[in-house]
Length: 354
Image (tube, one colour):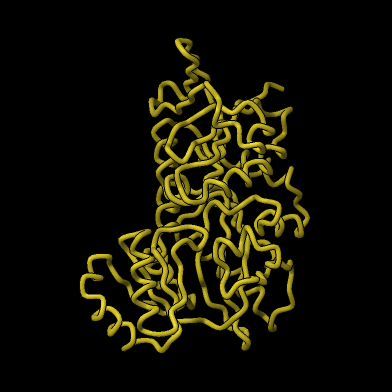
């Protein structure tokens, strides 16, 4: 069997650079090397693309010292990656790309657009689904037509903060405290704050405005944090895993609680009020299809005491770290990481035949 050439992208220019480097090790270690020749390309925080020599170099963080630059060419007649080592240049045709990139400049449709121009199949959602799902405001607009309950919200633009007291008044007309303030475009809860009064709301708005020009102020939902993994799209039926629960060590599941607080835990197949698990699974599939999802996503909800299901957000390139829910949920459903990664890559190569 002739092996195909796969490029794995990792790192990136977003605040989730470190998380991507944590995720990619799990992905690389579960790629079938009998089927794929693998080229590892890391993107530094500054935006330099470098060929990495090994998983060990990624784990040690020394891949950034590499001397070989790597560029995916947008030229569709080339269909590959250009490796540049001093004066030596090599072009390698690529069959599939696995962009293990979280957050801005990787999960938001930018890299997906480059790969579309290049004509190279890639794992995960396309330009539209990636950009909509990255933007919490537009995700909410899409979900509004599905009949899926979601937190009520007030949209705020950064320029509105010139009269921040008017913004606070508008929020207070609609909600009682506490409220949550979120940048519309930011991953892993970056820039997200809980505000318990007007002063905290002002501070939270200013903080969120540092991350994006669009801001959401949401009502507080009291419920358990529940996640569901989705796979499929295109010619493949959309499948939903069972559900998992986040037991955050912090007041809410922010970046530090996710990745650096050992007291945060995840529970697979928690006991929920009757019917809630199936409602989560059905809503997850409906939302994935509504944003034109392809490949994979993790869809997050709150489940209230009465069994009510409230949509929180969708993540189109969920983490693959040792504590990440997406692979954990599929493993609980009987699909191990080897099989999951293989299915994702096979499904990616079906993209051109959709």
